[in-house]
Image 1 (cartoon, helix red, strand yellow):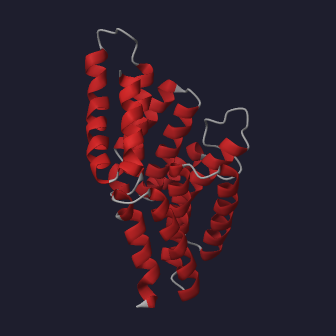
Image 2 (cartoon, rainbow, N blue to C red; image 1 turned 60 degrees about the vertical axis):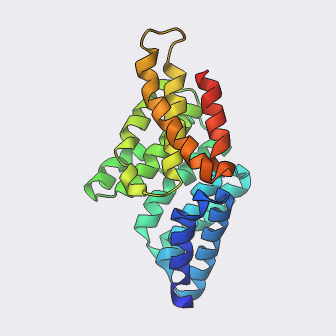
Image 3 (tube, rainbow, N blue to C red; image 1 turned 30 degrees about the vertical axis):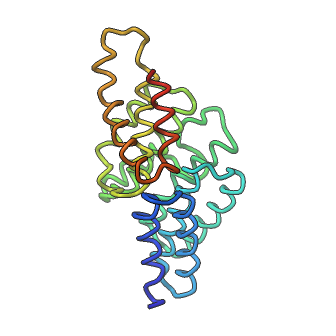
Length: 232
């Protein structure tokens, strides 16, 4: 029934659709979940829709200026709806996009007008909010890698691996695998005698990406190609 449509749209778009279709379709499905949730009063699943639409759009490379405006709209609405679970997972992506569009002196740090990740960690941990911690660590990993903070990227990748169970069957998982591999490749010295051992987690991640690419090459084939090129 229409009463449960926002929930159904969210679950399908968040956890299933991108394994076969472009992740953009998942983001668009989540936008529909947001719209339907507002219409039917399913504010919980509507909020989840706004959160996932935001981060999946970030993952596939939507233009960041427009995405920031959209994310700001979702953040304001989640605050009004008092949906803390969706909001705390959403804010890391809001701050990450803010960093990339309005960079401060340390844009690799997930800290600014929206969120101070370091300050919020203890509160999230005390609340057992593993989903928010997982989203925060992935956003930190991506920013650290993009800005060449190699050791920090590795640290965030290692920490984030322990929280992947909180985002089961979300696109967060392949994004973690992808950026984990990139971060590790960035610190392996050329010709190092330790390279073989250091490449083991990279190759494990590459095997996962190759398997996913068989079902959804539009989402994963380019990631496989990039890791293979960096590894060569």
